[in-house]
Structure formats: C-alpha cells, structure tokens
Amino acid sequence: MISVVVIDDNKPTADRIVNTVPWGTMGCEVVAVRYDGLQGKQAIAQYLPELIITDIRMPNLSGLETIELMRTLIPNSKVIFISAYDEFEYAYRAIKLNAHDYLIKPFSQTDLLKAIRKAVLELNGEKADSQQAAAGENQTVVQRILEYFDHHIGETLTMEELAKLFGLSASHLGRMIQQETGKRFMELTTQMRMDKAGALLCNSDYRVSEIGEMVGYKSYLAFYKVFCKTKGISPTEYAKRMQAGDAPREEEKP
View 1 (cartoon, rainbow, N blue to C red):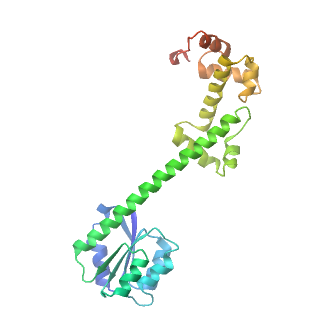
View 2 (view 1 turned 90 degrees about the vertical axis):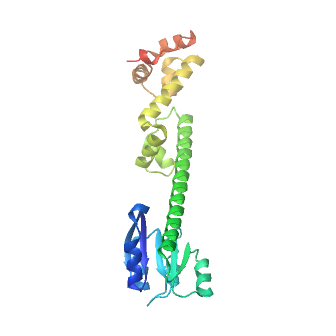
View 3 (view 1 turned 180 degrees about the vertical axis):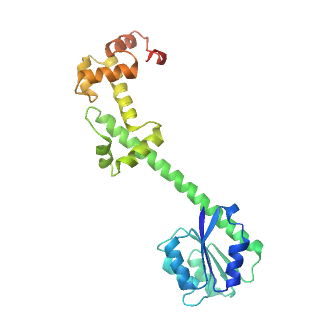
C-alpha cells in the first residue's frame, strides 16, 4: 500500500480529501492527517509517506518550507500542493521542489482524483523498476559468487565465508541463491562439485581419489558416497559409461 499524509490548516478541505477519495481501491492508505505545517512536518518524519498532499500557506510552517526540510528524508516521494493562491511565486517554488501537481482551491473532485491517480501510477512504476533493478543486481551478485566458488571448488568454502567475502550476511546470501537458482546453498554447491567431478572423470587421467580432492573432498569415502547418491552410480562406472557414450539416465538414480 502507498502511504499518504494529508496536511491542510483548513479542516474541511483536509477531511474532504481523506474521506472522499477511494484510497483502498487505489492501493493507498492515509497514515496521518494534520492541520498545521509543524504537525505535518512531524508526521512526515514519523511515517515517511510516499505521497504527500499539502496546503502551501499554513500556521507555524508553510507547506513549501515543510517539503524543503523533508526532501532529504523522502527524496522519491510525490507531493501534490494545494493552495487558494494562484501566484507565480508559489507555483515556481513548487516546481523547483519537484511538485507532482499543483491544485488551486476550490479544486474539483475530478482534478483531485486525476492528480492522485497520476502520482500512484508513477509510484507503482518506480517501485516496479526498482524491484526489477534489484532482481537484476541480485542475479549478477549470485553469478559472481558462483563463479568464485567454481574457481575455488577444491577449497572447503562455507556459505559464511563466501558471504563475508562479498559483504553479505550468510542468511541473505542463502535467500539470494535459492531465489535465483531454486536450490539451497548446499544442494547447489554439491551439484557443482559433482558436475565438475564428472567432467574430470571423463576428460582427464586423474585417479578417482585425486578428483575427489580436486572438488573439495579430503576423504575418498565421503566423495564416493556423495557421487553415488548424486549420479546414481560409482565414479568409475560413470566414467566408463560416459566414455562409451552411455550416459546414466535420471531414472537409474536411487
């Protein structure tokens, strides 16, 4: 839900905005309504709303001064100014503050709804862009981490160690990996180790025990058990079948 703060020293106007707009159907929620600029500033600091509808001239602190003070806290919020004064100076300052819209009292319900819908549309679009960008960034980070792991596959790297190397918490890294690959960290790294082992078995002259060490298993027995469980057959049998062009099928795995 998009959070909304309404500020106007004219109580009937503020209440009209709060009570006549179908906020819920527009995906919004009014988290505060205030009747002077100072209280409005406090509400903005408390709730950090995504949409602010504020009068320009109010007791204690004007709407313009309020937004000037709060822009550092909520630079991406949308602001709809309302005013009984159709003066160039106010409109100019509102534009300089990146006002989303500027309504002159008495404004119609149609104009009010149009301004709000436009703001909501832009906010939702920016959220979608931000989420898409974050998803792309997560994908890139996961790729970099998996490439690093692949280059150090013979080492006993833990998720905690990898997370620390990339400036992440282990829990966050685990969530990112599962989100991007559909697998948990241990599942994915085991698969990578076994795929690497399978390639080495088919394309090198290393002994099975040596290959186990090369993919991070100091114990031959541990490597053998994991390989059999993952591939469904022993490392030696796997190499024979692959070299003969008879790759083990998934249904042969236990």
